[in-house]
Image 1 (cartoon, rainbow, N blue to C red):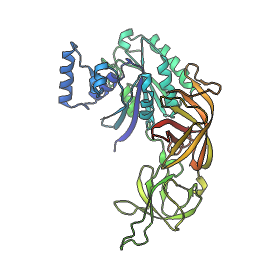
Image 2: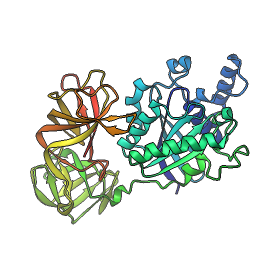
Image 3: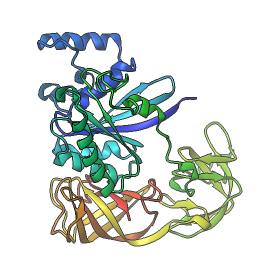
Image 4: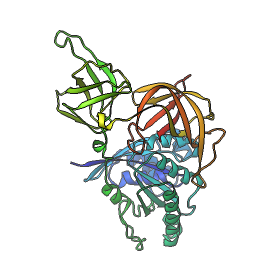
Length: 414
């Protein structure tokens, strides 16, 4: 059985990210014959010789016309050993919010750097976003090595500078690969022009990196989405709690506590469209039957009593601000955490990440678009939360505009 890796890409404008993604699709034979023919024809019409691989990924008309990526799009490819879901994210600073969305479920991020330019501010911003979202594996792809004559000192200098920045942000796993996306050097096939490089190709690393965030090994969390009471002749007293196991394993016979209400009961059944089962693991959608009719509704979280999350009415959180207007202390918002949405007030801004120094500054007057900061939030109703570093599923939330429902920020519980 082949494994699945969810990954994302990021890079500054014109670093060759779309070309790299196109190269991966091309070299893994994930492109239809008619698609390849269309790209070759479009390339010839532009006066080019080699197929413009970026055209495989830039789907919006504005993207093709401007030669940039605007929207986050998902690409699928596979090798004999692994399947891949790739979130192709934009590089321009104004689309950083799209990068946050694309990276939110990724297990690995590929950050591109132009070998001629080295690290730029947007590189540091993307690195900060990946560290912010705790993406566990990071790849630095130093692209366009052909334009610097595959110079090893250039690669080593960029690798060292990037590693220092990643270390300052606490990135746990980093691999650097010198590539030429245009010509395919070290993307899927080892390059003869980098004899000094002894590491894996990009694709080899993608195939070998450990997958899975060990969600089944984390404490059990079951956010309730819906209470099912059909009241039919066949099931007159049926009362099931429908939802998706966010983490851990839910088993028949286990005692559970519903939070934030605090009611306790025992799991006596787990139903699925395919019939009952004795246990359900992270990622499975099921209906849970309890031995007692405790007061449990949408937004409650079932957990084991000995591994219960915190119930809070105030929290300190990291925020990546995604709205055009700034965030200031006193803002009234909605916080959506799992299946529960509550009213909240941002009582204080306690810091902002400086992308040049990668350190937090003194409390800012406001958070602007694409800035990352720390805020204290007071909740109108309690939430059952985990630290994001402990559980990615119950440690993340969204900040929503109460007036129009637009998403304002991605938040991580500290």
